[in-house]
Image 1: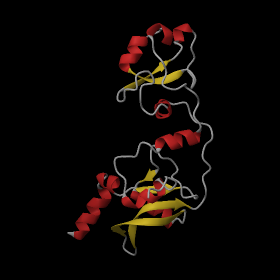
Image 2 (image 1 turned 90 degrees about the horizontal axis):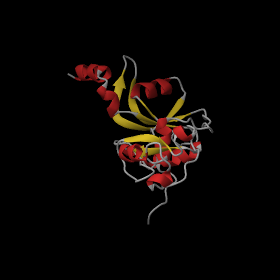
Image 3 (image 1 turned 120 degrees about the vertical axis):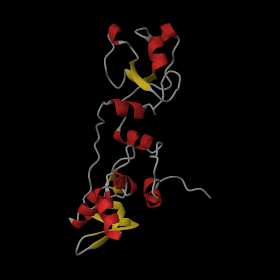
Image 4 (image 1 turned 60 degrees about the vertical axis):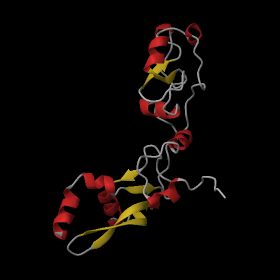
Length: 194
């Protein structure tokens, strides 16, 4: 029975979701907060075996080979520091993260699209300074008109975010699953409460 469990555990893709490893840079900060830098347990074990990471926390579960038994890593730290990117890619996801996943006209959350503040039909360009997250209702209402024509106001002026801006914003959106061993590493600089 135990052998069958191990075989199923290794072959079952759903098992990956239950034992991911939080990946920290050499400075003990996550490589990213949103999405959270996670590896499947197999990648964490492989990296540890190749001496590329240090294991700082483990799950109770183990994996076995004919000659080795290892507890599944829950937190690993890269031995070599990975320099974070300074320039942020202009993508739909990064735009939504910059705007905190809410419409910049009405504040609604949920199904979002993006809108050109100065419409392209009026010479507006696709850039950080001219594109914002918008709900479908506001986007449809605005159409190719100016903000003044429809009486809209931006919640905050659109600007290019820095990598650290996005990293800090990502911390506001924790994933649905946080293992207990990750918490100290995810909010290490959060203000302590008395």
